[in-house]
Image (cartoon, rainbow, N blue to C red; front, side):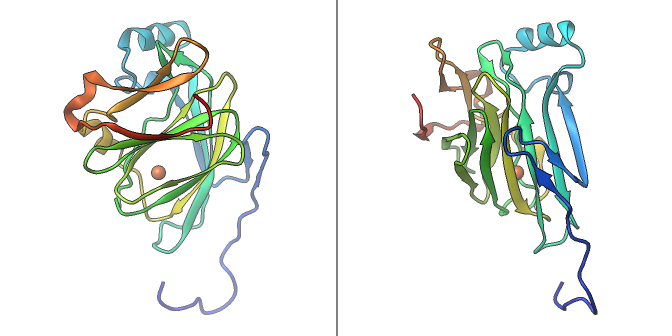
Amino acid sequence: MDNPPARGLPPLPNVSIDLDSGRLTGASSGYAKRFAELRGVFADDEALTALIEERPEAVAYEVSEWRRSDEAGDLAFGTTVLQPVMVGREFNMTRGHLHRVADRTEMYLGLAGEGALVLTGPDGPSRVVALSRGSVAYVPPWTRHRAVNVGSTEFAFLFCYPADAGQDYDAVERGGGLPIMIVSDGQGGWRAETRSRHLRGAGTVSGRDTGRD
Ligand SMILES: [Fe+2]
């Protein structure tokens, strides 16, 4: 896109977001991810299997997005809404990805509920950033990332990222999953724990920016 368009403006979004629910209207694409599609993502396979047997159609999270193109320089934005569900001791979370163009970044804005963003750098160290209404998080280049609902209500956030970034989900799975998991602390809160079963992409939690303990 080195030259300006010959005339006029490209199509503009007609999008609105309900700030209390995170629901976006006017999306150009979207999907609902069911727990049945997340086998191998959670540490506790038995708990996930039991959940799927009991509620085969249960939705883990929904993503709605608007984009004009996949071109470098363009932006894509949208919202994700994660359901409040436990899978064993682990909180419900997105599958997690590295951007296919791995130096591409992303920003998140918490809208509703209580969440956490797990960030794992290329050489392993991880950070967990708490996200609630109004908090902003940044995903650096070359960083695997995943959102987690750590609350008892829906967790919704806005995301915005370069439209040519893409998502490489296999990069997380090839690395054995993210090296930490977000689990119940047994007292109504959450904590980050080393994911011992998935240590091929080993790392440590080097810090935790959180508004709650
Ligand atoms: Fe992303």
